[in-house]
Length: 308
Image (cartoon, rainbow, N blue to C red; front, side, top):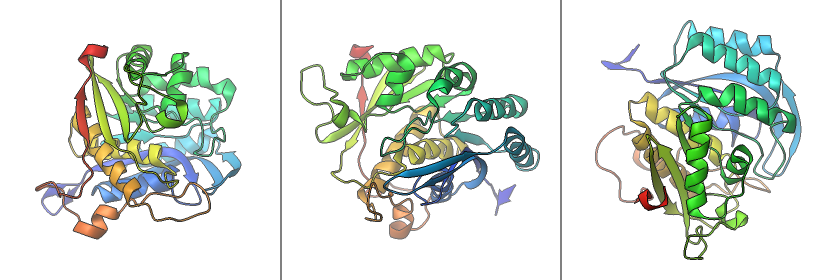
């Protein structure tokens, strides 16, 4: 498959839908498109939600999930796969069986447990099944702080504990990369080792990859319009991996992208509104290479060796 003389990068999202368009499969496909990646989708659940509430969740049958995965992989094999919301054990099993059957090279898994407003999106009795059945299939796992606490089994109140959690979760899943996102740090009360709020003025994510911890610090914006940021970040990582980046570079580029999307939030909805997935395209056109624009939000890379 080529676009002109260049190979077409492809990516697949396996997740729930969001009828309001800010999260889930809809956010993933927008993110793929914004990166110049051809996106495909497998629906796992149909979620009736908006920026204020989750009304209902309807899981698709395992056979419907399996048929969609077969339809994609047998015809247009994706270079990268992103897995999002898988709410029940039957959905988890269907996705895991499909991934084991088709063995994609790269799998980014966002362990979606809660909606932005706090509504549960993963059954409580399915969490352990997720850890045992789905997590080991991840090349990259992207939990936020509440999700990392649930997976790790301990609270996170310092940046050092973010590092410890990322390392422990990586070991639990068999050695893949783990990004513990810091977007929830402010409301979770996460502090730096000197006692100052870790999230004050910045959103710090911790990446554990290849035995090393790296911090990624970006500006924190005072805005309610952060619906779907976890979906967007994980699909941006998958898109960059499909484009050929290594894990560290893919995570850095994805962090830059989602920070810009938050900064250019569109102010839609009565609750936690969506980000602008196409802000860069609207401002600069689609450019896959070339100099970095001055107005792209800066992400600082932090060596966390002393916290390992």
